[in-house]
Length: 541
Image (cartoon, rainbow, N blue to C red; front, side, top):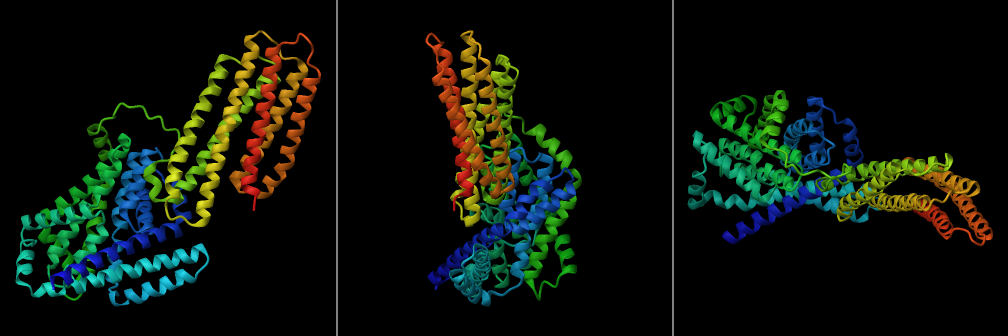
């Protein structure tokens, strides 16, 4: 009998957790575009931040995912600490939706829901339809797992040894409530899922193994246990990200402290709202929601002071932050956000390349020397773009290991290819600057014909680059196709310039100028080639 109980409970818990994972992953894919838009909606308005926290957590069905994502945003400087506090408060309310799903109490339908969704998943062809089937299958698995756990625990009700064991954890006194809350926090911290602990709590209550106050105390503890995920995510993060994680722990811990201090009154208050005796699952879900709503109302006016307090308590590490992008590894839990932010970062790389091209254009147009200041600026941009490429690649290769839709995987791949090409283009622009400086250092003046040739090449390359950068931004395939003609014209201009130079090299001409000039021409040709590589990425079938 004991073995049968263990098998049912472990199997049910595993299926429940797998269902949560499937449903959460499916919801994230379906909500991809909405998640991208939250970046534009983030404001310093605390009410808006709370609403965003609620909305995102409802979409992804996991407070851990949304909280870790928030800490990732803070780590990447997309969010201030004060904004993050509002989102975290909202996430605490959003996570209570899971409890209300369990209120549906359709455990007996879990198996047919799972089966129907699995069959649909096999036969559906489109990504969106398969993702929807996966989400529904996750929902079915949640109820199936809950039903297995509930049936597995039924025999325990008549076992004296287990009845005595559960009596040790009873929230009939203040210290009893605190003890039960600590148990709930520990279990949630270990399994890293408040949804799983909530499912276990509801199962124990439905089977009559624990009473309602004990179930409520367990739920209170679960709110503290779930902060462990965010805390672990903050290890190695920036100081501000650590402050956000600590804030999450403080908010939930203080909330549990004040509720347990008035625990009998809280239970009495809940008794006026729900009929616990007839629907204990509804009562537990209500307790979970009411705790988090009340806690949000308590802390919302104090997000500013709490932010200041954490800034004073958690000192800056003193280490300089060399990050150039607003991407962070903690954001990989929400791939759609990473994809959208990656494109923004790659377009920023494009702006930097335009600046480099304009600097060279000025040099050729005014026939002026390339100054130390200008060369240093070019080197700074080129170094930054190396960092852009590394940071973008590091985060995007992580999401490629996730279960992405085909369209999202394709977009990620294209973003990475454009990023690599942009970084290489910046290398060649820097080499052009150094070649010009080499000519200058040898006291050689670039003649009018050569200067005009280089100016024209730079201008044509710049126009072509602006076209493909705009096409990438707007996803305009026709613009990419039109750019093919421009790139071919640049190739012809390069050939003419090279042929003219080689045909007119006179005996006694400066070898330094000749080789440096040919180097510059070749660098522009290579830039054209890398731009054409981008065109091919977006025009090939």
